[in-house]
Length: 291
Ligand SMILES: Nc1nc2c(ncn2[C@@H]2O[C@H](COP(=O)(O)OP(=O)(O)OP(=O)(O)O)[C@@H](O)[C@H]2O)c(=O)[nH]1
Ligand SMILES: [Mg+2]
Ligand SMILES: [Zn+2]
Image: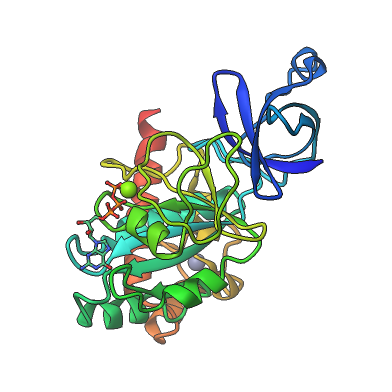
């Protein structure tokens, strides 16, 4: 039987298969081979339908694995900010975009609380207008935009990230996350329940779509392994213009004959994005000096 690990606890793995949850242990061979199953892994299990217990007999190859939270086969990071209370921090948004892209994961921007503010919607649209990023404006309260967002998640495993209080958990409730499933429990579609953010758990939202809530963080930095060359790639809308830079390793700072700065002057790159890029470049350079 094929399933997906949705929770890891004290050496046991909760495996979701056909809307049921099994308590499993990995086959002993995995330990010998130094393979630790991860939440998000697709696995084969041999299970006992009466006790809902079983053994993981195979782990399918992973597409990727995130470090924090440790989740494999991640499709997108939903970067959730609120339009108001708290207002979006666009530098922080760019950091989260970069952290996702540097790990090979597609970022999607979700601006919540559209019931509170309209001006900020225009600002956010403008800032990202020349970038290929997907944007969603939603209200977890009124339900505005929630269906469209839900439709765009189909079939993937997604991680929700963002500061505290932006409405990540509210959003999950709005898109119909079932309550945290316990072993042996049969999932009832659209049964809603409040769920809290305690441990890493994939929440099934129907079909083969899963979502992971994360607790909001207070301090966030660019991932340590992002250097200036990686950062440069994270501003995707700059890339076509960087082909016009005189130097191959141009970081679009003080260098002469820079295609990105020319594009900025021509209004083909948003100044907000360029300024945030420079701020992050400084951060990366300072880190290098002190390390
Ligand atoms: N006006 C309005 N308030 C919202 C909306 N969504 C969430 N809130 C409120 O925002 C606050 C934070 O919501 P949560 O869903 O707990 O936020 P969170 O991002 O999960 O926060 P952490 O778990 O601390 O990271 C709560 O008071 C919610 O009632 C919305 O669409 N509109
Ligand atoms: Mg929460
Ligand atoms: Zn350049």
